[in-house]
Length: 310
Image (cartoon, rainbow, N blue to C red):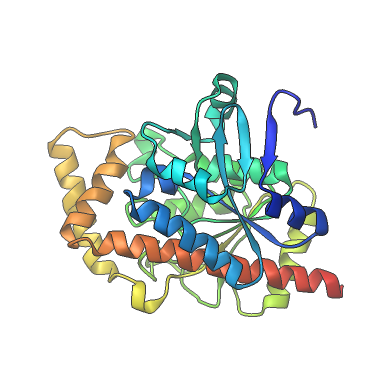
């Protein structure tokens, strides 16, 4: 693969782990720059990395700076991403332009998957995937996250998708594009900070060795896509799905009345839900990030153990 036009700058701990075959979990940086406000963003980023480490795996927060791809960040780099204004949100389609111009860029799920595969990192953790938006049958608004899943052989551990999306159509899209989807130790497909989206998962696994074997089989299959492992947030951190749905419905009505559309809708709805839940959704958001990172570390370690024994 020719990559002389850009450089991957590995944080030393991440580089050592990859060279020795030790488990590494990739993390996006968009949640630092666009998902949470300072100082919550830096505190949560550090807690997310710590959650990966609890299992023994190594975290690699991904970002772009000065024409280089950062594969893993130290504290100073995370702090810079947390405090600097106007950092671009970078999906996979923006990667060439941000790298060519030398601008700072915070990676989304889609661009993180591209970089994780390029760096040889097989696992990626995120709070929730992007998905098919409500009304997509006319708007064609489908997240690039879903497209990239069909292209990158990276295993994604997440808490499903946000309730503001069309969960049913998102599941249909993943099925149509043959993306393996399994829920970890639950029958339900989660919805971000709600444990239940109202949809059952197409598959459930409770055994770590079986899950590790499924990951290996998927990677060996020709033309296979990335795998999605959905894990619900903890019961004590979850918000009642009916309460969230009511808040979302109200926010959607407000967005229509105010003429908000396109990329602005998601941010508007998330902010409205935060206000309607008196800030509890923001706290739940942080809890989901930390919990999925913890589970991702455990799955990465289980996979490592399985491969050593087989």
